[in-house]
Image 1 (tube, helix red, strand yellow):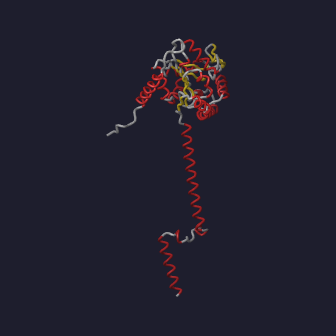
Image 2 (cartoon, helix red, strand yellow):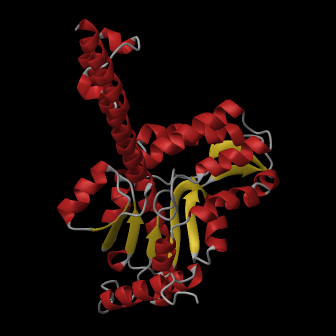
Image 3 (cartoon, helix red, strand yellow):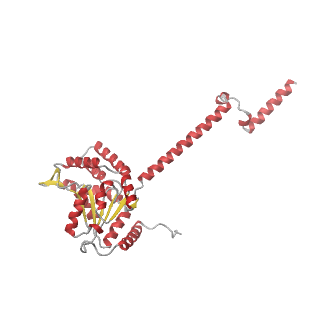
Length: 325
């Protein structure tokens, strides 16, 4: 007979998360907006916030599979993705990625990049945090439009916003001429203050009150985005942002388990190594106590001899004693 206390299915679990998050967000909803009744919105960073790791690695993998980049470039991008999950990003690395992607897509037809979408989604969708989707949908149910706000391409932001049923996406735009990418930007880099520019442009267009809005991010580089809203929420923060969030009293969510898993594995490895070392030390100590004859298979001290050999030794001694008489 099956146990009635079995875990809930993934769909029911997500529904419960959504309901709990919706109740919390509805309870937090304040009075009228300070901006003439304009509505609030919720803005979600993508990498390490909506999803585990970086979406860029899946674009790189798709580009490699279609011959756009080399195996070596893919390996370096995979390393950068691991480093990003463990330590976060920096301004220099973000700018380097932007320049490298611009060089890679220069001259490429827009249609060819669009055809990478299924491969990219196949990698990104399984890595979305159900808890963050639940929060996003709870915001929508509370009447707040939800937007992806990312330094990744506008195409990536639009694609995921459509698939996830969000209200829109704001990303970094690339120049297109005659159906091909030129490799040049078509606007500000959607990074640091660039995200605030995008948010204010959208707020003006859609009648959004940023002072009562929400923003979710993992990185210190998104401090401008977090400070421009009334409800900043920190997700999987890097060390600098964790410190600032503690000082400011912001809500902090920890969802990424990779760092903890690596620490557990390291501890297990260290424990195994210490146990092996201790065993070797004990064996060596026992060997040293028996002397070199034991190492060559010679006689053992009485305290180390098995019972059968003890009886045999006793009989031999008794025989020699009688023969001596």
